[in-house]
Length: 313
Ligand SMILES: NC(=O)c1ccc[n+]([C@@H]2O[C@H](COP(=O)([O-])OP(=O)(O)OC[C@H]3O[C@@H](n4cnc5c(N)ncnc54)[C@H](O)[C@@H]3O)[C@@H](O)[C@H]2O)c1
Image 1: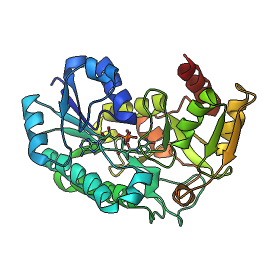
Image 2: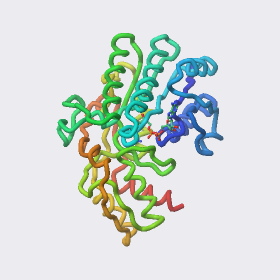
Image 3: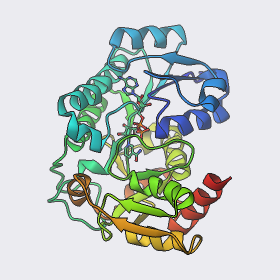
Image 4: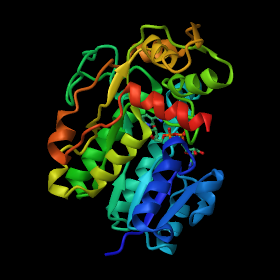
């Protein structure tokens, strides 16, 4: 059967690049972008677009019927830093949008779902280094609680109703095409913009805060790879650990200084430090490598080169 794909929350940091990658692979007309706001020019001009609220079940059902959608990528969510400010709004958006999509699949109106989780499912009691797929979780943030609950519901809908839902625990994502949307790892994007425009950056995390990160190209590749995998190879139905690199703000600044020797960084930790402190420093992703052949391509050096070259041009 021909693919007809709907991306919900398509105008965000991941959705923008994911939409363009899917349009490249499956054709512009087969990939419908949607969001509650319009996106950048590339996204808006490359294929169909709908204004769509992920929490509105009837509106979702209508768009899915109109375009004969069989696959949904649910990217709409409230991210970690913003969710701490608006706990109930975050819970309502993050959970109701997921239930809507899971129930549409349960009702056989769509065949396959991608829903992203996050390293935020882990908490202060989780082992910090090489954090494994199954370990102590106990998230301490609003966002992390919503992602962990979401994972349990995905697993439940797969086992109870046979819903083909697939998920990745993304680390912090670094990209140059779209700005990040209110997460705790946003510094790792802002720093490149400021390094180029002002030659200095004030980081909202401490210099030695190690977090798992990934370049967007790797994250998109992983997403397409997981969605392409044969169902029997997708053995984890809550969400896969995924890893590429881990570094601290100081290490990132050193790497930037190799390209911009006068670049200066200072540190003024804010409320996001407590969120970062509750997350792992590095992630063990052996299940993703074993089950669907995952391998990262971008380390910190390669990411820095790509970011600086593309933002400067
Ligand atoms: N970016 C990261 O580093 C990262 C890391 C881990 C997990 N994730 C997860 O990946 C997904 C996408 O993240 P992102 O960074 O692209 O987020 P983002 O904030 O950049 O984009 C989210 C998009 O959803 C849209 N949106 C908000 N409310 C909506 C609603 N009610 N209906 C439809 N659209 C709505 C927003 O307008 C925005 O365009 C989220 O589930 C996020 O939790 C992201």
